[in-house]
Each structure stands twice: as C-alpha cells, then as structure tokens.
Image 1 (cartoon, rainbow, N blue to C red):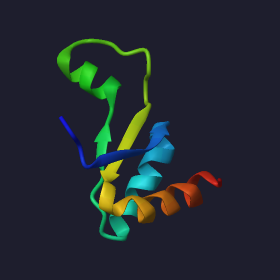
Image 2 (image 1 turned 135 degrees about the horizontal axis):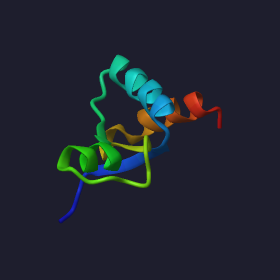
Image 3 (image 1 turned 30 degrees about the vertical axis):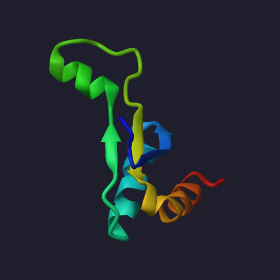
Length: 74
C-alpha cells in the first residue's frame, strides 16, 4: 500500500506537542502515531513510553520540516 504521508519527527511527547501545535497554527493537519497509547488502550504495555511519531502529507513536507527544524534547534 502506498502512502502520501512522510514521517517528519519521532521523539518525546513534549517536543511532539510543540511541533503539532505549530503545524496546526499554519493550517497543516498532521497524523500522530503513539505506540504506547495504542497499546495502553488495547490493554498491552509498550517499552517506548511517551514517544510519538508525526507524519504529514507529502505535499506539505517542506513547510513541516522547517517547523521541526525550528523546534528542535537543528
């Protein structure tokens, strides 16, 4: 299955939320993948507590990457 989404960030909850808020401020709607939360809801544990992945549509990649770079200071 092909996807039009690209992962732009993987890291802790605090940085993820900062990036998500800034992406939404400029009108982007990212997709968040949180293995620990998914596992918790299903009744399982996860060794990666608090880590999240953020994906954006490929057409929005350049805008999203600039925000990630600004937030993480790269």
